[in-house]
Image (tube, rainbow, N blue to C red; front, side):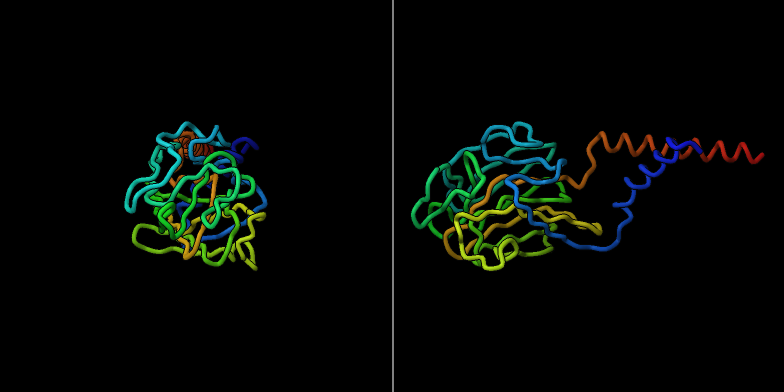
Length: 238
């Protein structure tokens, strides 16, 4: 067997591995970056200029939504997304007792709180399941909560202490927080809530759990090559 053939078979096996995994879990990560550290992630940037991995998404309007209203919706990398409630702000300085721009954020940023300007909780839903979701978490505190769901099943919930042990709303502090699903679980809904003002974030990013067409093509090519190798082995044995 040639090195190229062996590499192709390994690639096909690697692509199949996630499908065969049986252990359900969400794994969280924290990095000192403004954007997702994963190159495959697609970023929703709330109407700013293009971000890494982003195609044009629609209907980004800064402002606030009435309770139960759609704040933002669009399509990115073939996945429809919709935010209900919360607010998009574009201030360059602190909005007293309301919100502060996350360190590293540019343009509009997302905020959830308890007053009429940014009523929460805010629910973000997707038209298909995700294997990864992340966001820049600004001025984290214990009153900030993000909850991940697969349909009606809650997968995990995190507070600001997930990114800063003494989460006290420090406006000079921000980290990129992400979760990865495995074991057959996918993320279909993310809920942002805060028991005080405010839970600010930016650069929301995701990776679809459904492989993109290029991945399917690689998988089929790898499987086809494995079939050819198997036939050749049978012929050599005759």
